[in-house]
Length: 452
Image 1 (tube, one colour):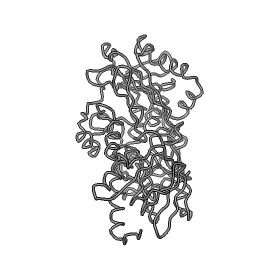
Image 2: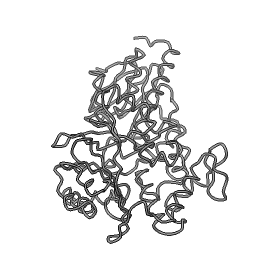
Image 3: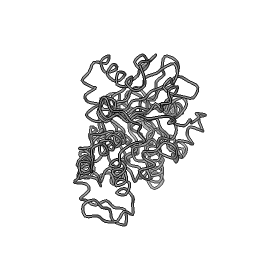
Image 4: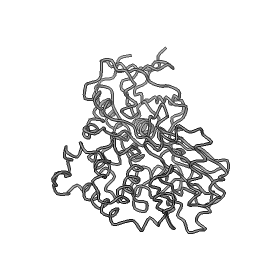
């Protein structure tokens, strides 16, 4: 027998949980269907053997992520600043290590040109330009970031920019156009904000982990949350929607789909979706990212004046960060995007762990090879998420996400990809859930109640 509700929400990440919470605040009955056996979506917190919270997914809260800051405050989870004090090695080959601050003039030129490109008032150039209204020229959508960097002078500057931008996008730079990069930078409020810690998008972390906030939101739903319910089909009619999954059928007046477009493509629709929506789902892809966290009894690298950050232009661990909780154990976080992440996929777990720790130990000391705990996750191998940090437009399709939030009859869409600001961030996911819920409330008020 089918379950019935007023609104069904597909996905229990921050977008779906926020949608449900906002709808309930308006007195709307809601049921949340999540394919996985956990909540949080691209946020996932586990606990180490020494009791510390480890964010295997999204972890940073930016300076002006007001919704996430408010959520942490509401649930009593303190924020603490990302640790950056100390020296950060820039590794250029096995025997060449220098402080990151001593980058070449070419590196400064590369980032300066990128900062200019991504400024909304940047004047027109012959090949790389944007108009005075901030729209991105089509020519930029035919040039990949890898091709653009190859035009930059020098070697180390473009390589450094490639590592930093690969980390920011979680993708191979040959798969992302300059136009898509510009759109992402602008959605974050500029290059300095996108890449920055203090005053930027990586300013703070959350005690108890970001996933803990998702679990608190989910706890409010009680029996209105269904885990292990992968949605396979949605049928639309004048009477509402019928949602099918192997776990059962749900009938609702409206549905909000909060999973990213490439993942949502697996859901069959009757009648078929409009072609513009199919194009959106075909012409976006999920980023490729592997994340690991090594846990130590304390952040010993600080004793040597090291920040815990690392940038390696060619090694298996291109970037490391100190994500240690205050007064707690030491956490070294490693993020590996694109083809380097796929190379790690081919290794056995023990070999993968040793490969990364051996690379870190070259710069943080032999103790690095002996953590008290180790956690890892390849997000591109997660069947229900598909990758991270977000869906990206393929070259030639930068404008495709502009339609991501458009309702199709009783089907509404949320998710960080639908947010005009902070696309790809937890803040964007929460904002999208609030917007979708308000959209649904307005539609319900304008529609006569369905006869039972």
